[in-house]
Length: 195
Image (cartoon, rainbow, N blue to C red):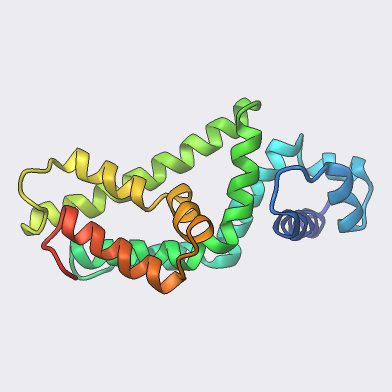
């Protein structure tokens, strides 16, 4: 019988390999070897690579304390403050999540379960953005002339891991530059202006 500790060991090994190689081309055999177990033992825990990657996303979120981080967004005193916390959250969580998200993005294109997990995650992000924008609207700080739906879509897109990748990894923005510039952009586009 397999143990939860074996599952954690597999996920930790997968994370180390994916982070080190920054790609989805890590094989189940490589993960098994890094975890110090047989390839067959990996399949006792995870039906395939897509299943492992979906579990790995949850594992990374747990290790990073994503629920605690989301609490900061949800408990922010105002909608604008929640939007600022949402941007700051991307600064803290995207660097360690990016390699796993990138791997899952590749696998999801050929695996239905991975695609569904990806879409579920995106919908969760969008719902958070809708709640932030809803608060701003209720408080009268949402810029006039932009609907809540469009505002939430903009917030979701600008704070996506893909946009973070373009700005930070592609253009070389520092974490501080990303946080300051994206916060200013969103405050100008959606809120009361200069933060």
